[in-house]
Image: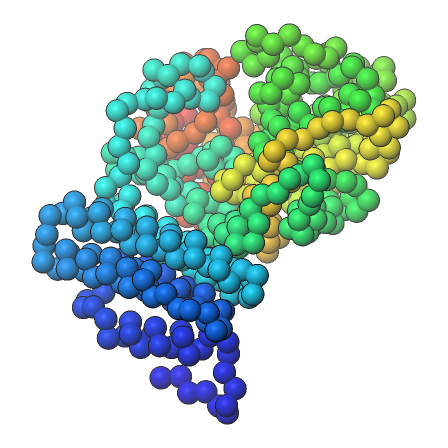
Length: 516
């Protein structure tokens, strides 16, 4: 037992120790559900300790421990499997959820302990619920969702039950390498704890507020962190949900500042909302919306008139070359004529190509920079629009601009972003490892950092998908492309050298099969 020196004790020590003594003598052969219930009980003790002099109602504590007892008895007496696999874990989860709600009692007397109690009990509730769902997965009657991309609910899709690191597992139990990092939005790998911890930490205080009249410390902190990372210390930041929403916001500011003429390199993809979709030369993306701007699909060398220029700097997705020295010179001239340059780094930023971005690594002249996919590691949708002070001044000088929506600058999402950014900043970025693995396996590739284009023998989407799955690989194929002649490979930045070598060899096998 821990021995304390002197007479001092921490607040709540007596209540927590009393619960610990009760738990030490409670139950038999405890397992994960008991641990979850005990964590919830400790959370209730923390709440009680934060309310000196208040009447103590032990009903929820007793109810939680009764649920634990029910589960223990059901398991060890080999009761109906449905009971201990799903029913009793759910009861423990519900009890822990009630304890989380009860932490509100102490919120204004001891907010620190109230937040801790809420996090402990919510975590306990989630743990018990996770056991229930693992033992008895959620069921459905058949496809009810429409897949992203093709508006066809009958399109055959993988059903992913769970994922960890660079691997996913289907409901049939098949394990596949995830070559697309979710969809390029899990740079730390699936189930990395830091963004989830950040999300939960922020949710203990305020998850959402009115973004039109209020901000939060976490929003200001993440904005400062991004500005410092990109050396854009005087710029302003607005946070959106998806990358498409961020590009929509960016285009509203850019067009307001520089007019409706918009230049974009052919073949690029910038999102699916109205303005973002209009930037794409692919019919399936911009159809059926009419362009709301005068969009011109031209190389950077032809950007002569004052207007907006939009670039995806890596070029890997569109088959365009990366930004060159000649491009930088032309972009500088374009800006001197009053043009506004929007750099779409929703995909390429935050270490996917270079850390922290290609805008900084390639010294791209920019007025607006958009970041997205890697910002919260897939825990929640969150993206960022960084705007130069000169552009903001031009916009406000015209009378202002309405933008944003309910989830702009969303606090809990920014908690996840903070956890992700801290881990990305601590990560040892090595932009050469992916290329080295592909080269060693003899896979022809064009690679920038952790974003590779792999050449294939032209094949139908169905044939390519089948070859990938046979090799144990899951890889995104853009819905507007059929037949397929190349793959975009972007595994998590945390993928081990051994797994990279395995992935690369499997890709080599796919290239060989499709060439036969």
